[in-house]
Length: 103
Image (tube, rainbow, N blue to C red; front, side, top):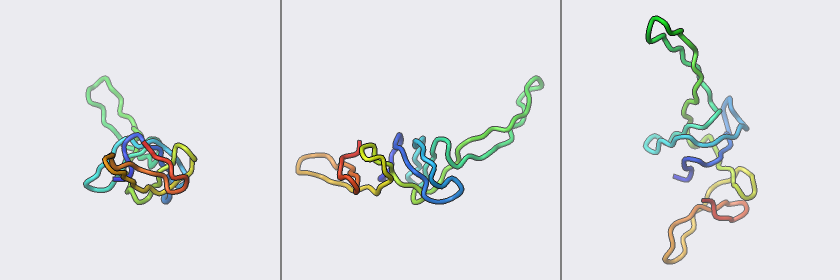
């Protein structure tokens, strides 16, 4: 996958459009990601014992990976990701705008 845990991304579509955030979790089998502070949902939680109160918890829901773009740490712009591999080296991610290695 082109986007990994810990990357900064920008949302391209949906209610959270133009927001940026850090990737918390990647679900590679379903091509979905969870982003910090983006696509927030509310869940009503019941009290677990008699002395606790019920509450409303806000949490980030997953979104499809096609709705986000990686933000390059060098040029600070949302970009697509290219892969480059020199002989004898590992495959590396590159920014398509400034051609810098992302890692």
